Amino acid sequence: MNIPWEPAIYEHKAALIGKTPAEVSASADLLARALKAEHAAYRADFMTVGIDVYNVEAESAGALVEETGSTSCPEIRTPPFSIDRFEPPAPPDTTVSGRYPLLLEAARIARREIDESVALRIAASGPLSIAGKLVGIEPLVMALAFGDRSAEAVLDFAQLLCRNWLTRIRACGFDAIVFDSVAAPPVLSPALYHKRVRPRHRRIMEHLEALGQEDRPLVVGGDTTPTVNDIVACGATTVICDFSADAERFAGALDGAAGVTVRRNVDPALFSAAASVAPAAERLAHDLRFFARPIAGTGIMAYDADPDRFRRFRRRLRDAFR
Image (cartoon, rainbow, N blue to C red; front, side):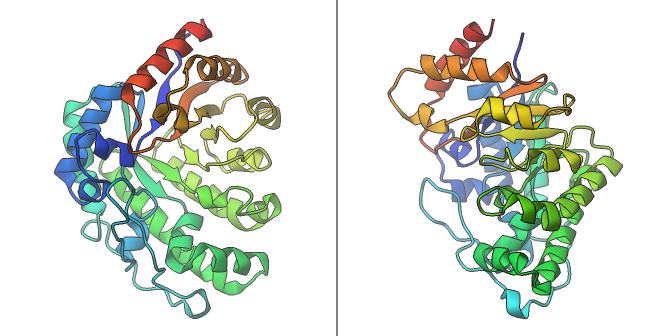
């Protein structure tokens, strides 16, 4: 059986062309070059257009993205709004604002040179992660836990940003991949996710479906075993079984959702270490058999990850999965 591959490559793609993540995130040409280098090095079945995938929407609304080092993603150090005094600005125009045009141009360039069999998807942030960038994660989660209406106002605006960006991505002929890992336990309890975030994820997935996107990946990293059924119920068709989760328990929680694709991640530290890749490949082969529609993936690859170790790992996995 041929297992599809989806390594999580963001800042690492900059290393493949000898640039910093900040440089690549600010240039459509460099990002397209990095995507082509990523394809040449990893030959993955799924690729993501993006570097600092959680900053783009908040930046378009006024957040300042700053360089954090030569090997790490740029970051929003200071939220631009206070949750206690939040007044939503006018929604940014996705045709001209922020880095929206840059990401679309990079995708167009890369698409011309990367085989059509590769799913090239543009990164979008989910509403909780956007809201966390706008007002800070801790104030947001505390306001949600106490039922504060201010949290709903921020999430309403964040959801609008997400929806508008997804609409633009689809209008330009691309698929999107939605990232919202702030929604994972233990940042958010399963009960809080079910009550306050699941309805928003449902609306986002329904919007993507209405826009004609058949595969609707919702990336919520960490151990989402307690919430995965809620995530699937939102309409997500691909979910993440991260390396911190137990694959058998995760599969048991998914009982009755056999049509869902599950990306089982391996710990990305493996590709920056000197240990043998064989034991991890055998464990991943074992874990993938729990799922009817598996994808082999990784957690976020470090800037200095070694493509040769990944290729050895991939060969060992192929042999182990026969």
